[in-house]
Length: 258
Image 1 (cartoon, rainbow, N blue to C red):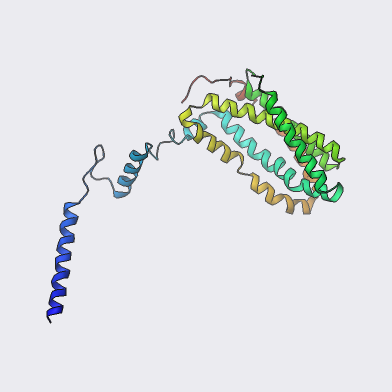
Image 2: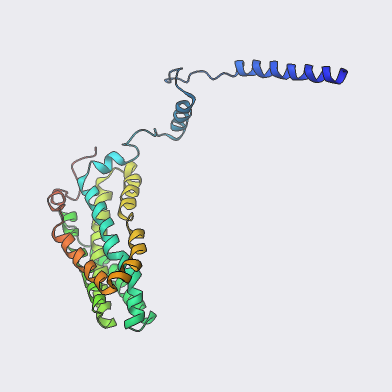
C-alpha cells in the first residue's frame, strides 16, 4: 500500500502546485486592452502590436487605398477579362495552330520571340515619354493584341503572325508600363505592396480559368472561332471601355492619398 499512498500524495502535490501556478501566472490586462477581452482578441492584439499592424484595418491592408481609386478597380477588372478571353487562348491554342497549320515548334518559337521583342521595344520607347494622362494613353495600345489572335484565326503565314505578335507585345508593354508607373506615383509607399498585390490578384484571377476552358470550348466551337472571338473581344472591350472618363481625370500624380 505504501507505493499507492506515495503515488496518491505525489498526484495531490502536483495538482496543488499546478493550481497555484495557474493563479500566480494568470495574465493581467495589457495596457490599453480591457480585461474582459476574450483570449482570441488578446492574442490578435499582441500579434498586431508585435508586427506593427492591426488586422481589422482596411487602410493598412491596402484595400481602402485600392477601392477608393476607381481606375484601379476598372483596370483590374478589365485586365482579368482580357487575360481570360485573349491572353489565355493565345498561349494555349497558339501552339496547336502552329503544329497543325504552320511549321510546328519553329513557328511558335518565332511568334513568341516576336511578342517578347515587341514588349522590350515598347518598354524602351517609354523611357523618354511622359504622357500627362498616362492611363488614358494606356487604353489604346492593347487593341494591337487583336492582330496576333486574328491572324492565328486565318491562319496567316508564320512571318505575318510574328509581325502581329510583335505589335501585340509592343502595345501590351506600353499599357502595362504606363499603368504600373501611375500606381507607383499615386499610391503611398507604405501601401504600395498591398495595393499592387490586390491588383495583380484581381488581374490574374481569370487567367487559369481561361486556359482550362480554351481546350474544351475549342473542341466544341473550333479554334478559329475562339481566336475570332478573342480579336473581337479586345477591340470591343477597349472601344467601349467605361473607364475613359475616370482615367482622363488621373494625372501623373493624383491630388492626395486617402
